[in-house]
Length: 254
Image 1: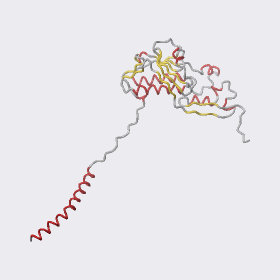
Image 2: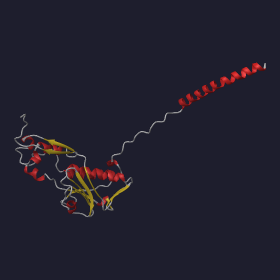
Image 3: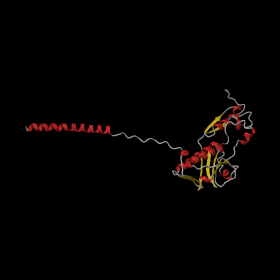
Image 4: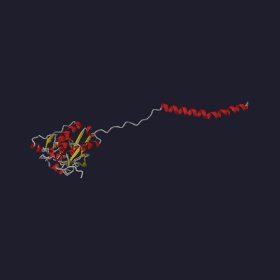
């Protein structure tokens, strides 16, 4: 009897690891089935800085509401008058277009309406100058004029000056201004009285290569009425069009 009991106990000891393994396996299976899967949080698309809203914007310590936006004259005004506006093909008063867009964005950001005026209007103490205006501060900010891609934004004597070597560069200087506001991560943003930023815009260059048709033969002002010039007016915000046309030239095999 004792021997039989000993054999039964030995058999039970041999079966115990099997039961334990089965129990652990079942537990692991149950845990895997009942624990919810953890997924990564959805990626949030960065907000366009132009869509941000602020309680206040100050420029050189002065509230935005004290400012006017002043734009430079249309550089093609004289040429358009010569042609009696027969070669319109798109708006050429880029600085005015930029000024109006800036006013629209600032109004959306703050609720403040900033007036937009030509530089022929009497000068006021606090102005945002777009392009090469008649104000002396614009001249001080003109060092980028030779580079079609470059722009500069600077506070100067109560004026916020925005200049670019091309209309497209001036236009994208505003993107840098909006990004400056957003980087402050505050509902009350400001531009310091000594603020200055110099950078270049990411523009696309288009080279127009050809003969007299490209150069603008027969047109008294090829910079205005040649087809590359018209293309520049259509694509002015993001492109620099270069006219490499030369009258009388042709492609040859020899």
